[in-house]
Length: 291
Image (cartoon, rainbow, N blue to C red; front, side, top):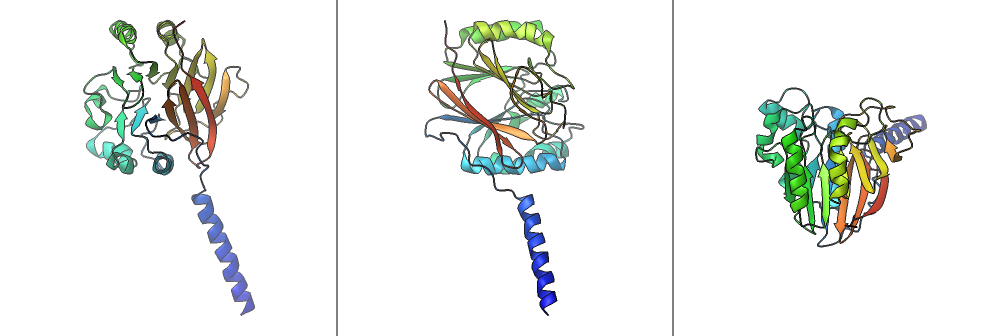
């Protein structure tokens, strides 16, 4: 009898431990979470339809339940592989259903794995445009979504005019290919950097979000601009990040990561959240101001 009780107790402990491993307790966010602020999320390279995406999606939903961001921007590779109606359901609509049902607006940008026709997919709110800008729903912020796979001359001209005409205090750009990255598979896109960086610097862009490399990296400010690589929303490249890179402020290639941010006045606070719920990076960024 005593042995049976012991066996049952051991089995219970093992089952409880397994459950705890499956549902780790998330870290508390370190964001202000204030009324009237701009709260948003950043997600990239996610639409695989694989288990890693769904685990990360559950953590995104848990984060949203504690930090009700109304906006999520995507930095491309929204769908890998086929793009049939059932693929949009399994790779986007189903994993993020609680967010979509809760009114979160997704503002997409396209990656190299995305068909251009995705710009017509209503839940990405691109209205048929490969590149576009929009004013944020709170605070004095404008986002610029670019199409970095084919950075045509017409797009660069459009981008400069949009930046020049923008009256918002905060200017935030997002697109797929990173201007700065310490990952080995792709790394920094130097040609794109030559085309875009002068505009980002001259027109006081404060933050740039990108993906493409399946890692998380916050780059040390380059010419006073903070760059993020948020490319592990569903895909992951373990061991791809150069741990000796001189430009990395913080990086992770061992877990999937997405980012949440909040803007109040001239300050942006951010938390990078792993699929385990651990906050693996956090900090504050001051808005760039005209000199």
